[in-house]
Length: 245
Image 1 (cartoon, rainbow, N blue to C red):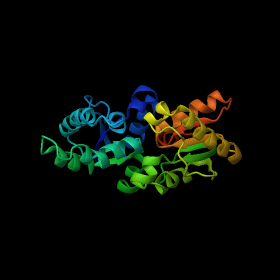
Image 2 (cartoon, rainbow, N blue to C red):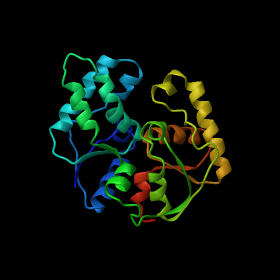
Image 3 (cartoon, one colour):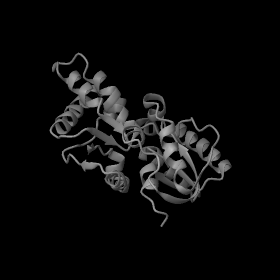
Image 4 (cartoon, rainbow, N blue to C red):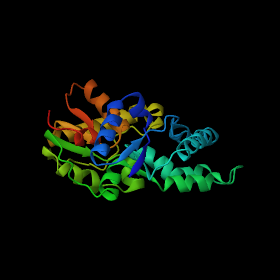
C-alpha cells in the first residue's frame, strides 16, 4: 500500500508534530508514505469566503501536484480539508473554461481519505497497541460529522488505547466555534461557542480533548489557555503514536 500524505495548513504551520505522528503510525502499519513537496493549501479559505476563482487556481495546483505522483490513496489528518477536496472540488470546477477539471477533481477526490477512516475502513485496523494515560473526550469536527459521516472510527481506535478512559460529554455534536473564516468575521460568536464546549468539558472531568482536526484543537486550545485551563488538546494521530511515555 502506497499513500500520499496531504498535510493541512494548520498542521504544516502550527502543529507539524501531527504530520510526523501520522507518518509514524502509517509506517508502523506497513504503509509506504510519500509527501508531494509541491503541495500547498487546498483552497478552502478562499472557497469559504466566496473567492471561487482563487479557489480554482489553488485547486488546479493541488490536482497538478498530486496527479504527478503514484499512490493508492491520499491520506489527510483533517476532516475539513478532506471534505474540501473530496466533496467540494467538483462544485468548484463545475462549468469552467477547462472542461476536464471536474473529471480530474472527481477522480482524485475518490482517493482522498481522512486519517481515521483510512486506518479503520481501508487497512481494517482498530488496535494499534498504543498507550496513553488519562481521561479524554473526543470532539468531532463539523465537516467530519456532517459531510464525511465519520463518527465511530476515531472512537473505535481510542477504545483500544491502553490506559485511556474515553468519556461522554454534553452536546458533543455542537460546533467548537472555529469554522475557518467564521472565527475571524464573527469573533464574539465564535468565542461564545468555544466557551459552551469548555463548560461541557469541565463537567465531563476529562483532562484531554482529542480531535481529528488541528483547526478545532487550535481554537479550543487557545480558549482553554486564555481561561486558565491546563487541559491538553491532542490530535488522534498523536494518541495513536503514543506509547505512554
